[in-house]
Image (cartoon, rainbow, N blue to C red; front, side):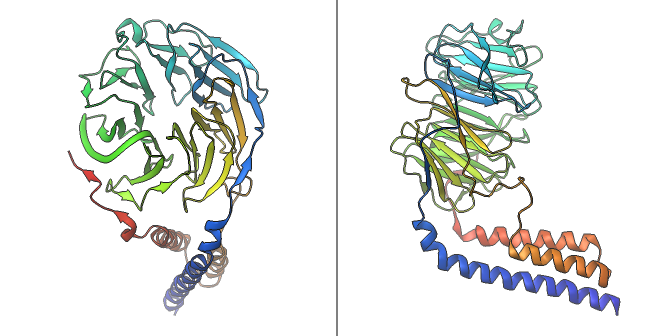
Length: 404
């Protein structure tokens, strides 16, 4: 009798969610036209400005302590800032050319910066002091081999460098010596990005290629010319910006493009992408302005009226930090993420179907003796169904990838 009641409860919960999903899908289809017509919020004045650089700010990064930011500029300096007070804490000098690339290790202890005369330098993340025995003692690129991109592996043991010599190099952060041979490409290596797990490395050398850092094997080649690439922090997707200003999503299981590219409305190619810590929002920056998008439905929810050469989100996802593209400003600006945009992790937020699920689940726990495992299993099934409804398999465009 108890087992029969338990099965009936499970069936009722699934049926209720199924009916709710159908109703939600129907409602979404009837309101899609009005949603597309809704205009994004436009903001012209930033919350805060960080002034001090004398040239364009090409890279912006936030330290894991959430209190500080580091910026790299064409004025050949790096600067560390207090995010709350907006004051400069440290000016780092030593580069002989424009600082064109920068990365901060996940623990915040190392800063790597590269310039347009081919030098990579390592700095202490707390003090800003140059570290001895760093990479520039082992390699100095020529003027024709400029540093374009840097990224630390998630465990901080390896630094990846991309340059105009059309190669990717991996460096040991303990000895600062080259690990194995360079990986060569047909074009300049403009972006290198480790996946959140560190198991994959995305390289943009005109087209995008995916490598295994451990084996140096090419896993996939994406048929797209990218000006910028970024992983979602949850590691489920790779985002790329194309030369025509579109944004593309890639499924990391199949390496197929997810649905069609979406047109951003930028009048210039996208110079920077940033994804919020919850993998729900994307910011795109160009010489015209910054746009904020919802990843779930690709809706443009906000426009920030300032040019952008670099972008990042604060670690709590509440702000966007951007380096101005035009040199008449040379500042970094802080913008508030639109409060109307739902931020997962900023307090619980559930849909109607999940609210009903919770109510009935607790009811079934006490009345019929269902276990918490049953409840968690139901929630997983509902989440899986929602994901399929949001992104059905038939929307995936095939034949955009070739395997190595």
